[in-house]
Image (cartoon, chains in turn orange, brown):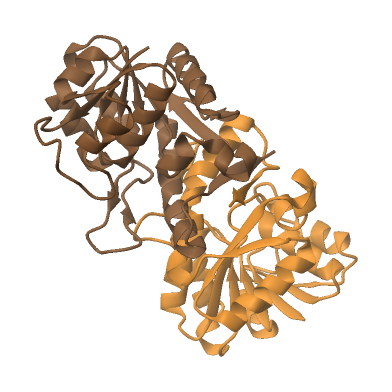
Length: 223
Length: 223
């Protein structure tokens, strides 16, 4: 599958590497593909990342990534998801599936960050509203990057991942992708309005992370 | 133990009945103890409730409940928690432990309700701020009433309950009470500011409830 990733931080790099390993045709979109040596936050440089995937992927602009992928994945900070997708001209790519992995976390006052999701605010809804051509599926935002692509590393994989989106076929496609990552308990919460659930849950996640001092965690919905 | 419950809806009745069964000296505080025949929401009338506990408890005013209990439990709607505790004159009862079980859910636009908790708003913090004499412990707000007092009914009890509060001794006392209900995985999230975690999680819970059409659920934190 052709996959275009919008955002080249830890999440984009981690998902990209996994998708390359699974044999997909991956491009990693970044704001300035010339800056391959730059290190940002906790991510390695894009040069190092390319080496880590044996140069089986390409680093491109946001726009090239949006154009390349049959499936798009957005993993910039949630505060700039819509802006990055505008730079990517995602309104012009037709009815593609877009996987939204983002959270709006404000670290300006230190840890724990402020979680900006609320009863009337979610990144997933904002993206769907700004890009009605895209089939937005919210998922993967409720855990740290290493858990996203290796669920079995936590409790043997006995925990839950969530999806929300308006298009059933898009969700079925995303569920297949999640299964290929090792996920088995995939819970469909409903339309994109349900993105508020997993996004507000981040208010819990950051407290769990603070208390347990461990990012290799996730929740299992017992029912 | 002498326990004063502020709020006589489903949660207050359920916790009260369990505490009576465990042998505690329970009073259930309600706005107007004369209205024993009234049925509200999903709760039975207080007359029926008293019969169900073989009249081993008393129905009293908020103020009498706050005065009676060595431990207080507030379980009105979160929007009126502070108001009810003011009616209870909870500022005059000294340094008692107060268990806050409440959520602010706005059903005015139907289901799913709007979850009013956010990055800078929680019932637990509001109560602690309004009543500095109380040792507020946030807990029990992340599940339906039947699960609160019978955790083993869901996945054999293999799921997690959260606590947040400023006072360690108060949390130890509350943990003992939770253990007597059958809880084993009790996770201390930190000071009362951490109440935002379990309160924001309700944004997830209501979506889980909507999707699964089942209130007998809870999450297990896998780590």
